[in-house]
Image (cartoon, rainbow, N blue to C red; front, top):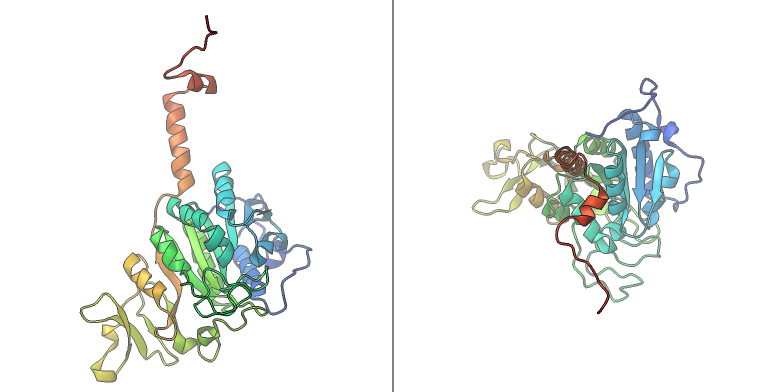
Length: 347
C-alpha cells in the first residue's frame, strides 16, 4: 500500500487542493478531462498529501497531466516515464508515485520500459490513457488501433494487429491489471482507489475518447444506451453477469479453455453455471482481457490482483544486508578488490 505521510494528516483535503492555476489545454470533449477530475477526487478520498505525491509523464496529450496537478511532477521523454518513476521510487520509497501515459507513449516507443516496470513490480500507479490513436501528433494509428483504420499514417487502412494493454501487462507478470472507461465517473474512481491500495505496479487501462481524431471509437460498448449489454463489470467473488436485466453471463465452453456468453433461462441454463470472478486467477484474467466487441462483451474492473513484494523493498533489503555484512566498505575498496595489475613503461 502507498503511504500517506502528510505532516498535515489531520487536515482533510479536497479535489480543489490538487488543482493548479494552469489552464487545462486539451481539446473540448477530450476524455482526459474526466480522468483528471477522477484522479483529483481519488487523491482527496484516500487522504493523499500534495507534498508526498508525484506525477510522472512521457510525451503526448496525456503527458500534460503533471501541469494540472498541484503536486510534484516530472514531464519526461517519450516512453521513458516508467524509468524515471522507478528512479523516484527507489530514491524515496515513501513517495506516492503515479505515472500517466498514452497508448502510443506506453506501448510503442515505451513498450520495453512498460513491461520491465511491470515485471519488477515497482510500487506505483500506472494510468494508461488508451484512445487508440496518436492525438498530439495529429491522428496517426497507434499500437492499439484496429486493422482497417484510415489515418494520416495508414491512408489505405492499417494492416497491423493491435496490442491489448491488459493482456500484455498480464504476460509481463503484472500484479494488478484493471480496465475502466473515462466517462464512468462512479466506477473509474473506485478502480483507481483499488490500484492505489495495491502494493506493487497497478496498471489501469482507461478507455478514453479522442473527440478530434478518433471520436466514438469505443462508443459501441461504452455509450450509455449500450454499455449494459456490451460491457461486463467484473467484481471479485461475484458472478460474471451482464445485460440490462443481468440475464446474460459468461461460462467456460464445454471441453475448451474458452469463454462463451449464455442467456439465463435458455436451454435450462441457470446462474449456477455462470463463472465467479476470481481476480487472483491469471488465466481467467487473460481470457477476460482478450474479449472484444462485438463477439463478446468488453470486461472492465479489476481483472487481476495478487500480492508480491514490491521492487524498492527488495532493493533496499539487499542494500541493508550488504551494509551489515561489510559496514566499513568504501568505493575505493570496491574498485581495488579482485584481480588488479600494474602498467609499467616499456624497457
